[in-house]
Length: 152
Image (cartoon, rainbow, N blue to C red; front, top):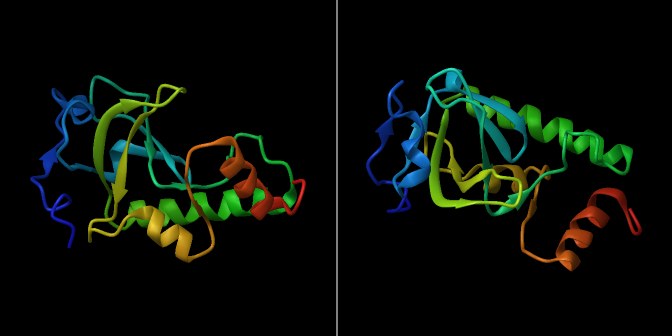
């Protein structure tokens, strides 16, 4: 098991719920406190005074659910990836290890794991619902081509 993951879990409370973005410990997020947006993004809700905070999993990418899909296959994968993330989430919550950084959309970045210490990305990639994420336009175009074929 990853020693980084074995770090102390910090329970979310109504007074300190979003301290998780300010430290590097793994935080257990209860299923009722998180809404799955798509295969790689969640929103904190209802368990703190700081709701509507978006968190983005690192290391993998899934198609967007927000209408940005370019072909039917991409839409289908987005729906399946989102449903699978909800299953994993409902089975034991989310363990989030923040980086302390945000992306260009203002989402807090970090690793997301199952209660058993398996990265969500590893599961979704193995099941064909996600692709490895690497920075750069060329890699983004490669991911899109995988979902929609050449020229997407």
